[in-house]
Image 1 (tube, rainbow, N blue to C red):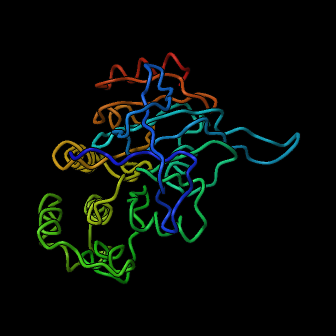
Image 2 (image 1 turned 90 degrees about the horizontal axis):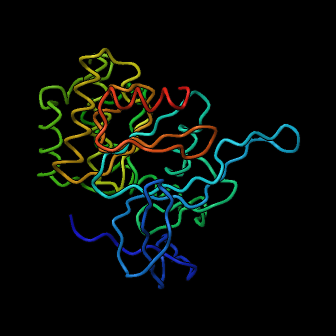
Length: 282
């Protein structure tokens, strides 16, 4: 992978949301806490610093995220896990720019997304972030091939023919591109969703319970595809899951509890993830 672009400091942002001048980089401790340092480059695809998300006000306020620092390396596959209510889905939504933060900062590549205007944020989500959802979110009136191309069509961009052919081939979709979603199995629909997310070559793909609606065989296929996207093409993937088997496909599992980082598991196995969750009461 080429060196990652520098991270912004307080020098401000250009109209497209990218930083104007001054740069820093980060290091990450064993607990996941990040600090800004020099020199000028970083391997972070996405990171958060002192991230807080509070729902409601006053006595009704509920803290979903409480001072979370996390750094995701480019080309890695990271799973986020924790007990119910731990804040894992909220973290993914904040990292992806789908939800606003109460305080703290989030960078996607070199861009501090917490400083973007709504139009800039919409453009970033369209052009630089890919999404894979549990419910597939395919448009039923479009063919599989048209669904795959939709983000690029909305951005007014043409696909790279070689990359399109590689993605479609890797996902086993060449003979399904003319079919509409209703004519595809659940596993095939999710593969279309994965292709749609990968085709624009985003900074990061966020997957929210991508195997939640699939049987074990179809789920294993999708997880293998996400893992190979990271290992073979350098695509960064961040996945929220409740399933220890799904998490075992990742390079690292980040654990949350009560809206705070609660540790991580490197090179996870199903057994090591189960043990870590048991220690959290999850």
